[in-house]
Length: 312
Ligand code: HMG
Ligand code: MG
Image (cartoon, rainbow, N blue to C red; front, side, top):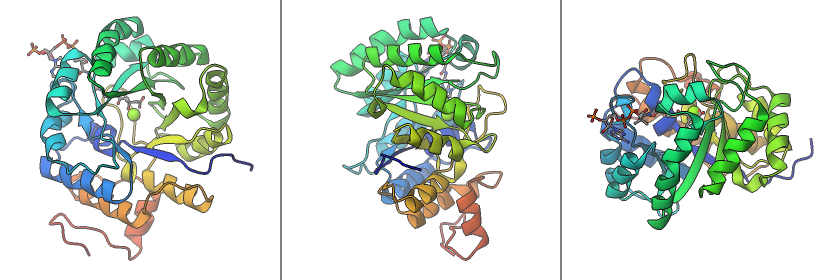
Protein backbone atom coordinates (compact mmCIF):
# COMPACT_ATOMS: atom_id res chain seq x y z
CA UNK A 1 0.00 0.00 0.00
CA UNK A 2 1.43 3.41 -0.94
CA UNK A 3 0.34 6.28 1.30
CA UNK A 4 1.21 9.96 1.16
CA UNK A 5 -0.07 10.68 4.69
CA UNK A 6 2.73 10.82 7.27
CA UNK A 7 0.88 12.62 10.11
CA UNK A 8 -2.74 12.04 11.03
CA UNK A 9 -4.74 14.55 13.07
CA UNK A 10 -7.15 12.85 15.43
CA UNK A 11 -10.20 14.69 16.73
CA UNK A 12 -11.21 13.08 20.02
CA UNK A 13 -14.99 13.03 20.31
CA UNK A 14 -15.42 10.71 23.31
CA UNK A 15 -16.43 13.41 25.82
CA UNK A 16 -19.20 14.57 23.43
CA UNK A 17 -20.23 11.92 20.88
CA UNK A 18 -19.30 9.23 23.39
CA UNK A 19 -20.97 10.48 26.53
CA UNK A 20 -24.07 11.96 24.85
CA UNK A 21 -25.41 8.47 24.23
CA UNK A 22 -24.81 6.92 27.65
CA UNK A 23 -27.80 5.90 29.75
CA UNK A 24 -26.05 6.74 33.03
CA UNK A 25 -25.13 10.28 34.04
CA UNK A 26 -21.41 10.80 34.24
CA UNK A 27 -20.45 13.19 37.07
CA UNK A 28 -19.06 16.54 35.91
CA UNK A 29 -15.77 16.01 37.77
CA UNK A 30 -15.26 12.67 35.99
CA UNK A 31 -15.76 14.37 32.61
CA UNK A 32 -13.20 17.00 33.61
CA UNK A 33 -10.66 14.35 34.70
CA UNK A 34 -11.31 12.40 31.49
CA UNK A 35 -10.75 15.42 29.21
CA UNK A 36 -7.65 16.41 31.16
CA UNK A 37 -6.24 12.90 30.75
CA UNK A 38 -7.00 12.95 27.02
CA UNK A 39 -4.97 16.15 26.68
CA UNK A 40 -2.16 14.52 28.69
CA UNK A 41 -2.23 11.64 26.21
CA UNK A 42 -1.38 14.08 23.39
CA UNK A 43 -4.77 14.63 21.77
CA UNK A 44 -4.68 18.06 20.15
CA UNK A 45 -8.38 18.45 19.45
CA UNK A 46 -10.86 17.28 22.09
CA UNK A 47 -14.59 17.90 21.70
CA UNK A 48 -15.49 18.98 25.21
CA UNK A 49 -19.31 18.93 25.06
CA UNK A 50 -22.38 20.38 23.39
CA UNK A 51 -24.47 23.49 23.95
CA UNK A 52 -27.58 21.72 22.67
CA UNK A 53 -30.99 21.65 24.31
CA UNK A 54 -30.66 19.84 27.66
CA UNK A 55 -34.14 18.47 27.07
CA UNK A 56 -32.97 16.79 23.87
CA UNK A 57 -29.61 15.58 25.22
CA UNK A 58 -29.52 15.74 29.03
CA UNK A 59 -26.04 14.16 29.14
CA UNK A 60 -24.55 17.39 27.78
CA UNK A 61 -26.40 19.73 30.19
CA UNK A 62 -23.25 20.39 32.25
CA UNK A 63 -21.06 21.46 29.30
CA UNK A 64 -20.57 25.01 30.62
CA UNK A 65 -19.33 23.67 33.97
CA UNK A 66 -17.10 21.10 32.27
CA UNK A 67 -15.67 23.67 29.88
CA UNK A 68 -14.93 26.24 32.56
CA UNK A 69 -13.15 23.70 34.79
CA UNK A 70 -10.92 21.85 32.32
CA UNK A 71 -7.35 23.10 32.52
CA UNK A 72 -6.83 24.57 29.04
CA UNK A 73 -3.67 23.16 27.53
CA UNK A 74 -2.45 25.89 25.14
CA UNK A 75 -1.62 23.26 22.52
CA UNK A 76 -5.12 21.78 22.58
CA UNK A 77 -8.33 22.94 20.90
CA UNK A 78 -11.56 22.17 22.80
CA UNK A 79 -14.49 22.57 20.37
CA UNK A 80 -18.11 22.28 21.48
CA UNK A 81 -21.21 21.48 19.43
CA UNK A 82 -23.59 24.38 18.76
CA UNK A 83 -27.01 23.76 17.08
CA UNK A 84 -28.37 27.33 16.91
CA UNK A 85 -27.88 30.94 18.05
CA UNK A 86 -28.83 30.10 21.61
CA UNK A 87 -26.09 27.46 21.67
CA UNK A 88 -23.60 29.96 20.26
CA UNK A 89 -24.52 32.53 22.92
CA UNK A 90 -23.98 29.90 25.63
CA UNK A 91 -20.63 28.99 24.05
CA UNK A 92 -19.49 32.62 23.89
CA UNK A 93 -20.51 33.15 27.50
CA UNK A 94 -18.46 30.10 28.50
CA UNK A 95 -15.39 31.52 26.72
CA UNK A 96 -15.27 28.84 24.02
CA UNK A 97 -12.82 29.46 21.15
CA UNK A 98 -13.94 26.79 18.74
CA UNK A 99 -17.36 25.41 17.78
CA UNK A 100 -18.80 22.66 15.60
CA UNK A 101 -22.07 23.04 13.73
CA UNK A 102 -23.88 19.94 12.51
CA UNK A 103 -26.30 19.08 9.76
CA UNK A 104 -26.87 16.00 7.63
CA UNK A 105 -27.08 14.69 4.08
CA UNK A 106 -30.64 13.42 4.65
CA UNK A 107 -33.65 15.51 5.68
CA UNK A 108 -35.41 12.91 7.83
CA UNK A 109 -32.41 12.34 10.09
CA UNK A 110 -31.84 16.08 10.37
CA UNK A 111 -35.47 16.66 11.42
CA UNK A 112 -35.12 14.00 14.12
CA UNK A 113 -31.75 15.31 15.29
CA UNK A 114 -32.11 19.09 15.19
CA UNK A 115 -35.76 19.55 14.15
CA UNK A 116 -34.73 21.21 10.88
CA UNK A 117 -34.51 20.11 7.25
CA UNK A 118 -31.13 20.56 5.57
CA UNK A 119 -32.21 23.88 4.02
CA UNK A 120 -33.66 25.10 7.32
CA UNK A 121 -30.40 24.18 9.04
CA UNK A 122 -28.48 26.47 6.69
CA UNK A 123 -30.93 29.31 7.30
CA UNK A 124 -30.27 28.71 10.99
CA UNK A 125 -26.49 28.33 10.73
CA UNK A 126 -25.72 31.24 8.36
CA UNK A 127 -26.16 33.93 11.08
CA UNK A 128 -24.63 31.61 13.71
CA UNK A 129 -21.49 31.20 11.58
CA UNK A 130 -21.35 34.92 10.78
CA UNK A 131 -21.54 35.83 14.48
CA UNK A 132 -19.01 33.12 15.40
CA UNK A 133 -16.60 34.43 12.77
CA UNK A 134 -17.06 37.99 14.02
CA UNK A 135 -16.20 36.73 17.53
CA UNK A 136 -13.03 35.12 16.13
CA UNK A 137 -14.19 31.54 16.76
CA UNK A 138 -13.07 28.61 14.66
CA UNK A 139 -15.95 26.67 13.10
CA UNK A 140 -15.97 23.02 12.14
CA UNK A 141 -18.87 21.44 10.24
CA UNK A 142 -20.39 17.97 10.39
CA UNK A 143 -22.35 16.15 7.69
CA UNK A 144 -24.20 13.25 9.30
CA UNK A 145 -25.64 10.25 7.41
CA UNK A 146 -23.06 10.63 4.64
CA UNK A 147 -22.96 6.88 4.01
CA UNK A 148 -26.55 5.97 4.83
CA UNK A 149 -29.56 7.23 6.78
CA UNK A 150 -31.47 5.22 9.39
CA UNK A 151 -34.74 6.58 7.98
CA UNK A 152 -34.12 7.11 4.25
CA UNK A 153 -31.57 4.38 3.48
CA UNK A 154 -29.10 5.18 0.70
CA UNK A 155 -27.74 8.71 0.52
CA UNK A 156 -26.43 10.05 -2.81
CA UNK A 157 -22.74 11.12 -2.66
CA UNK A 158 -23.76 14.24 -4.60
CA UNK A 159 -25.84 15.30 -1.60
CA UNK A 160 -22.84 14.82 0.71
CA UNK A 161 -20.80 17.06 -1.59
CA UNK A 162 -23.52 19.71 -1.75
CA UNK A 163 -23.92 19.90 2.04
CA UNK A 164 -20.14 19.84 2.64
CA UNK A 165 -19.59 22.68 0.16
CA UNK A 166 -22.34 24.73 1.82
CA UNK A 167 -20.70 24.27 5.23
CA UNK A 168 -17.36 25.46 3.84
CA UNK A 169 -19.10 28.39 2.14
CA UNK A 170 -20.48 29.67 5.45
CA UNK A 171 -17.04 29.61 7.04
CA UNK A 172 -16.16 26.13 8.33
CA UNK A 173 -12.44 25.43 8.20
CA UNK A 174 -13.06 21.69 7.90
CA UNK A 175 -15.94 19.33 7.22
CA UNK A 176 -16.27 16.06 9.09
CA UNK A 177 -18.02 13.50 6.92
CA UNK A 178 -20.01 11.27 9.24
CA UNK A 179 -21.00 7.63 9.00
CA UNK A 180 -23.54 8.19 11.76
CA UNK A 181 -24.90 4.65 11.86
CA UNK A 182 -21.75 2.82 10.78
CA UNK A 183 -23.04 1.36 7.52
CA UNK A 184 -20.20 2.53 5.24
CA UNK A 185 -17.79 0.11 3.56
CA UNK A 186 -14.35 0.82 2.04
CA UNK A 187 -15.28 1.00 -1.66
CA UNK A 188 -18.24 3.23 -0.83
CA UNK A 189 -15.98 5.44 1.29
CA UNK A 190 -13.59 5.85 -1.62
CA UNK A 191 -16.51 6.68 -3.90
CA UNK A 192 -17.79 9.43 -1.61
CA UNK A 193 -14.30 10.84 -1.00
CA UNK A 194 -13.57 10.73 -4.74
CA UNK A 195 -16.66 12.85 -5.33
CA UNK A 196 -15.72 15.32 -2.56
CA UNK A 197 -12.13 15.67 -3.77
CA UNK A 198 -13.34 16.94 -7.13
CA UNK A 199 -14.23 20.18 -5.34
CA UNK A 200 -12.77 20.13 -1.80
CA UNK A 201 -9.07 19.64 -0.94
CA UNK A 202 -8.22 16.68 1.31
CA UNK A 203 -6.80 19.11 3.88
CA UNK A 204 -10.33 20.41 4.58
CA UNK A 205 -11.93 17.00 5.02
CA UNK A 206 -12.16 14.71 8.05
CA UNK A 207 -13.77 11.29 8.34
CA UNK A 208 -16.05 10.41 11.26
CA UNK A 209 -16.63 6.68 11.35
CA UNK A 210 -18.85 4.82 13.76
CA UNK A 211 -17.89 1.18 14.16
CA UNK A 212 -21.40 -0.30 14.31
CA UNK A 213 -20.65 -3.02 11.76
CA UNK A 214 -16.92 -3.35 12.38
CA UNK A 215 -15.86 -1.49 9.21
CA UNK A 216 -14.43 1.68 10.75
CA UNK A 217 -10.73 0.74 10.57
CA UNK A 218 -11.10 -0.63 7.05
CA UNK A 219 -12.88 2.59 6.08
CA UNK A 220 -10.05 4.59 7.66
CA UNK A 221 -7.49 2.76 5.53
CA UNK A 222 -9.62 3.41 2.46
CA UNK A 223 -9.71 7.13 3.33
CA UNK A 224 -5.94 7.24 4.02
CA UNK A 225 -5.39 5.82 0.56
CA UNK A 226 -7.31 8.80 -0.81
CA UNK A 227 -5.04 11.23 1.09
CA UNK A 228 -7.40 12.02 4.01
CA UNK A 229 -5.36 12.77 7.15
CA UNK A 230 -7.95 13.82 9.77
CA UNK A 231 -10.06 11.30 11.65
CA UNK A 232 -12.58 11.60 14.45
CA UNK A 233 -12.49 8.86 17.07
CA UNK A 234 -13.62 8.28 20.62
CA UNK A 235 -11.47 6.77 23.30
CA UNK A 236 -12.50 3.24 24.18
CA UNK A 237 -15.04 3.34 21.32
CA UNK A 238 -17.57 5.28 23.41
CA UNK A 239 -20.48 6.73 21.57
CA UNK A 240 -23.43 6.99 19.28
CA UNK A 241 -26.09 9.46 18.32
CA UNK A 242 -29.27 9.47 20.43
CA UNK A 243 -31.34 10.32 17.35
CA UNK A 244 -29.94 7.53 15.15
CA UNK A 245 -31.52 4.22 16.22
CA UNK A 246 -28.93 1.47 16.52
CA UNK A 247 -25.96 3.83 16.23
CA UNK A 248 -23.09 2.59 18.37
CA UNK A 249 -19.68 3.90 19.28
CA UNK A 250 -17.20 5.76 17.18
CA UNK A 251 -14.03 4.14 15.94
CA UNK A 252 -11.99 3.66 19.13
CA UNK A 253 -9.10 6.12 19.33
CA UNK A 254 -6.81 3.41 20.76
CA UNK A 255 -7.52 1.08 17.81
CA UNK A 256 -6.87 3.90 15.37
CA UNK A 257 -3.62 5.01 17.02
CA UNK A 258 -2.41 1.39 17.29
CA UNK A 259 -2.92 0.90 13.56
CA UNK A 260 -1.41 4.26 12.56
CA UNK A 261 1.62 3.72 14.83
CA UNK A 262 2.32 0.40 13.13
CA UNK A 263 2.18 2.10 9.73
CA UNK A 264 4.69 4.79 10.74
CA UNK A 265 2.00 7.51 10.60
CA UNK A 266 2.60 10.01 13.41
CA UNK A 267 -0.26 11.10 15.65
CA UNK A 268 1.52 12.61 18.67
CA UNK A 269 -0.59 10.36 20.94
CA UNK A 270 0.74 8.14 23.70
CA UNK A 271 -1.28 4.91 23.69
CA UNK A 272 -0.64 4.01 27.33
CA UNK A 273 -1.85 7.42 28.50
CA UNK A 274 -4.84 7.14 26.21
CA UNK A 275 -5.78 3.83 27.84
CA UNK A 276 -5.50 5.56 31.21
CA UNK A 277 -7.90 8.29 30.03
CA UNK A 278 -10.49 5.71 28.90
CA UNK A 279 -10.14 3.87 32.17
CA UNK A 280 -11.10 7.02 34.06
CA UNK A 281 -14.56 7.02 32.51
CA UNK A 282 -15.05 3.24 32.11
CA UNK A 283 -16.03 2.47 35.72
CA UNK A 284 -18.94 4.94 35.52
CA UNK A 285 -20.61 3.24 32.54
CA UNK A 286 -23.16 0.46 32.72
CA UNK A 287 -21.39 -1.59 30.02
CA UNK A 288 -17.80 -2.40 29.04
CA UNK A 289 -16.13 -0.10 26.54
CA UNK A 290 -16.10 -1.78 23.12
CA UNK A 291 -12.64 -0.64 21.90
CA UNK A 292 -10.56 -3.69 20.95
CA UNK A 293 -7.15 -2.39 22.00
CA UNK A 294 -8.55 -1.29 25.35
CA UNK A 295 -10.16 -4.68 25.90
CA UNK A 296 -6.90 -6.43 25.04
CA UNK A 297 -5.11 -4.22 27.60
CA UNK A 298 -7.78 -4.87 30.22
CA UNK A 299 -7.39 -8.63 29.72
CA UNK A 300 -3.60 -8.35 30.03
CA UNK A 301 -1.70 -6.70 32.86
CA UNK A 302 -1.68 -3.08 31.72
CA UNK A 303 -2.80 -0.46 34.31
CA UNK A 304 -6.55 0.14 34.56
CA UNK A 305 -7.99 2.73 36.95
CA UNK A 306 -10.76 1.73 39.37
CA UNK A 307 -13.81 3.80 40.19
CA UNK A 308 -12.04 5.25 43.21
CA UNK A 309 -9.33 6.57 40.90
CA UNK A 310 -6.69 4.14 42.14
CA UNK A 311 -4.53 2.68 39.41
CA UNK A 312 -4.10 -1.08 39.57
P1 HMG B 1 -36.44 22.61 19.16
O1 HMG B 1 -37.27 21.93 20.18
O2 HMG B 1 -36.94 22.67 17.77
O3 HMG B 1 -35.95 24.06 19.62
O4 HMG B 1 -35.02 21.89 19.17
P2 HMG B 1 -36.70 25.37 20.02
O5 HMG B 1 -35.93 26.50 19.43
O6 HMG B 1 -38.17 25.26 19.72
O7 HMG B 1 -36.49 25.39 21.62
C1 HMG B 1 -37.13 24.48 22.48
C2 HMG B 1 -36.60 24.69 23.88
O8 HMG B 1 -35.20 24.39 23.92
C3 HMG B 1 -36.71 26.13 24.36
O9 HMG B 1 -36.86 26.08 25.77
C4 HMG B 1 -35.36 26.72 24.05
O10 HMG B 1 -35.02 27.80 24.85
C5 HMG B 1 -34.45 25.54 24.33
P3 HMG B 1 -38.29 26.37 26.48
O11 HMG B 1 -38.63 27.76 26.08
O12 HMG B 1 -39.24 25.34 25.88
O13 HMG B 1 -37.97 26.17 27.91
N1 HMG B 1 -33.22 25.57 23.53
C6 HMG B 1 -31.98 25.45 24.05
N2 HMG B 1 -31.54 25.29 25.31
C7 HMG B 1 -30.22 25.24 25.49
N3 HMG B 1 -29.30 25.31 24.49
C8 HMG B 1 -29.72 25.47 23.22
C9 HMG B 1 -31.10 25.54 22.97
N4 HMG B 1 -31.83 25.70 21.86
C10 HMG B 1 -33.11 25.72 22.21
N5 HMG B 1 -28.81 25.54 22.24
C11 HMG B 1 -32.63 22.00 18.89
C12 HMG B 1 -33.99 22.31 18.28
C13 HMG B 1 -31.61 22.20 17.80
C14 HMG B 1 -32.40 22.94 20.05
C15 HMG B 1 -32.64 20.54 19.42
O14 HMG B 1 -33.10 19.71 18.39
C16 HMG B 1 -31.28 20.05 19.84
O15 HMG B 1 -30.71 20.55 20.78
N6 HMG B 1 -30.74 19.02 19.13
C17 HMG B 1 -29.42 18.50 19.42
C18 HMG B 1 -29.41 17.02 19.19
C19 HMG B 1 -28.04 16.47 19.44
O16 HMG B 1 -27.25 17.01 20.21
N7 HMG B 1 -27.72 15.32 18.77
C20 HMG B 1 -26.46 14.69 18.92
C21 HMG B 1 -25.33 15.43 18.28
S1 HMG B 1 -25.23 15.21 16.51
C22 HMG B 1 -24.35 13.73 16.32
O17 HMG B 1 -24.14 13.02 17.27
C23 HMG B 1 -23.79 13.40 14.97
C24 HMG B 1 -22.28 13.66 14.88
O18 HMG B 1 -21.56 12.94 15.86
C25 HMG B 1 -21.75 13.27 13.49
C26 HMG B 1 -22.21 11.86 13.04
O19 HMG B 1 -21.94 10.88 13.75
O20 HMG B 1 -22.81 11.83 11.99
C27 HMG B 1 -21.97 15.15 15.08
MG1 MG C 1 -21.03 10.78 15.63
